[in-house]
Amino acid sequence: MATTTQIPAAPAPAVRRPKRRWGATVIGLALLCVMLFPLYWMINTALQPDAGLVDVKPVPTSFDLSGFTSAISDQGTNLLTSLAVAIGAVVICLAISAPAAYGLAQFKLRGSKTIVFGTLITQMVPGIVIANALYSAYVDLGLVNSYFGLMLADASLGIPFAIVLMRSFMVSIPHEVIEAAEMDGSGRLRTFLQVVLPMSRNSLITAGLFSFLYAWSDFMFALTLNTTDDVKPITLGIYQYIGAHVGDWGSVMAASVLSAVPAAILLVLSQKYIAAGISGGSVK
Image 1 (cartoon, rainbow, N blue to C red):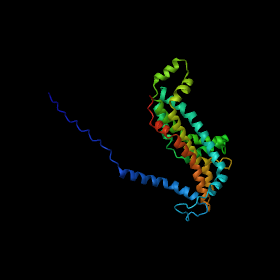
Image 2 (spheres, rainbow, N blue to C red):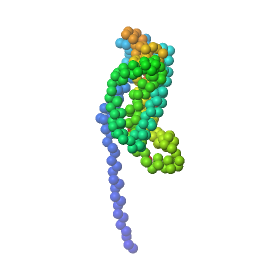
Image 3 (cartoon, one colour):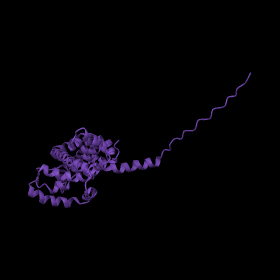
């Protein structure tokens, strides 16, 4: 009777576990704490409205929301003004930059590279220079102390960035897609609205978000182009709220916390679109 010998199975290769880089993690957490400390101190001071700026405790022992109540009553209208101006600036910015980016990306225009370079150069001009020039023009046009005037000025902050961002995305849209839409009877405007814009959704959201942040945090145009309290954004309201001597830092910090909430919510909701929009050139 023949006997069979069993060959022992080869041992399974050892699985290498990735090394945990505790040093990098600790350094990252330390840097995160340093960057978030001003936000924490702002919230901490807002919850202690009766304490002076020097007497604020590192950790609040009680939560007093009277500072937020005072901030809402004093700055609530300014928050709504900033929201209206920022939304209007986003609409104007996208209405101008989207067609411009599409033309620079898909049409063979003479000097398109020069136009894009000039668009980048405009972002290097100091804001105070633009504000002073706009004031003289706004006086002649009657746009001083108006919502539309401030929307238009704030939109100019985001238009150069939006054009460059959306152009880099629209360049990667295949010409075959646009040609197929035109062969089906779509004109250039319909192709742009129904084909190009849906494919450029990520870049549109990214450009719109940055335009909103530019308008929401604007202070120079709000201070220069408004001579009355008819149109007062939250940035100008907090500046005037502080004044030369302030004793109610709790309400000031509460107003600052409220002004940061809309931007934080938008950043959280649109972070995946921001990553896709900034990367660009990834249309499949």
